[in-house]
Image (tube, rainbow, N blue to C red):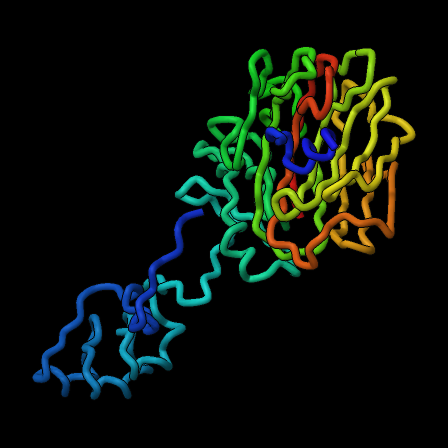
Length: 352
């Protein structure tokens, strides 16, 4: 029950330039007209002799063929749209790329096709930062189909964009400026030996996302520098997906004898299975956690660098029939202890 509680609660205590603002009367492209225009009625009869800018008068509409200068963007001038010398206003839909640098310091992240309208309001504005203003390359997360994405490359603090960041006394949660998979840094977490007490050692980040999707896929690059040895029974959490607050969870764990495992819980532990081998330490490995949420026909799949190392089907991964939120967690957590000291780096986190 202690392990289930810790995993269900995520380690908590148990017990581009901006688009133009186009107004309704801007369809004629007035902003693109070059130069002033006469608007006097006395000059209306002189249509054949105009050699300069045209009058914006109704009688001038028939003189399209003779105009040698820019046309007024009046309704009668619609035939001459191709001859306008001035730039045209960008009318709806705006053709500017969604992935151009945003002035507000955000990165556009594209939602998956099956995301609901409610997800779009909450999840498009991920808090990963925009590309550097010095004209550097686009951020890794830009344009990816995701409910949430974090590449750690341009944010000010490692916790920017995350719901919570937890670093207990003696732990380290910061940037790794040396090892990363997208320039120029990754998340770095380090834990001392756990005490097995009521305060679980932690160096981790969590993000809660509102979604109605019945399937969650968490992917991230993981470089384990070291996980020490310790006697007894202990579990050290590396990553976790939780559903609807504390209803259900799937966790990727390191455990004694150098093995890794997957633990699935609802209100009680459902399934616990060891992986054939942990990922290679000292190098980045792409980790994928694929979970289908269901009370009767759920499934869990774990892959390292695209190779499936664990799969379970036909199990309970949830209780309620509908998903309302998913919480993703990456980093180190003393799920049950006392755990050995550990250190890792994580980069390019994506939830789909």
